[in-house]
Image (cartoon, rainbow, N blue to C red; front, side, top):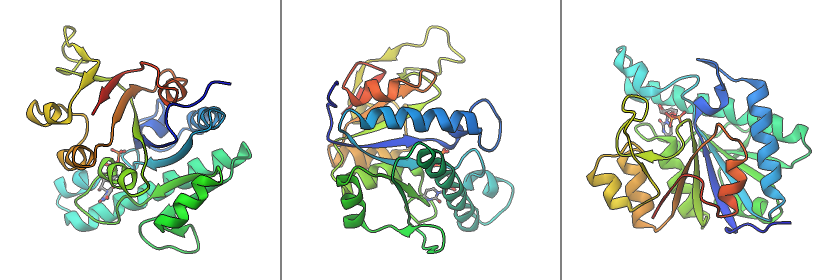
Length: 237
Ligand code: UDP
């Protein structure tokens, strides 16, 4: 059995990742394949916490663009991440993986509140912890949540699964000559304005020396390859 390069990681899944090929909502088939891949990762001995986005259901910024109060819209976005987290928990538990959802906004009938030490204890016991409701604060993103939780639980890296297979110097969808970076430094991400994560998340990772691996989800086994330290996309430190 191959051993993980990292002891503990945060896996960041955007809401779009759970939608699969759909425009909106959750594709059960897709979420089941993510859960299966997470199970495969556990065999390497790594501890995995997951931060799930909500963009497949609602994004605060989209609501505020249509005239909603941004704070209210962001709370709706955070609730969307809870829906996604429960769907992922369900898929993982169908595979007999002990999973706990911890939410940054208390809703005790649905999930545990976020308690840092308890989250770490779950991870030590081999459970998957899903961090829901982002940071619990409007005006932040789930990328920032991933950076924050990674710092809090002493994760060795953030694995960011995307629709694109790494970080490019320009949008590879629009520019066929776009060049993919193999390695990057956070400061370059900020200076070049590369759209990896929002700048709050980048700064948090940079200040706390948390490496980030950005890779494509088209090949689901990339998650495990990233855990094993294989070259899967772009490595940022
Ligand atoms: N959100 C928030 N605070 C947080 C995390 C998320 O207000 O700490 C809201 C925000 O409105 C965001 C939405 O939740 O648009 C969904 O998160 P995100 O856009 O990061 O999801 P993703 O793009 O990863 O699917």
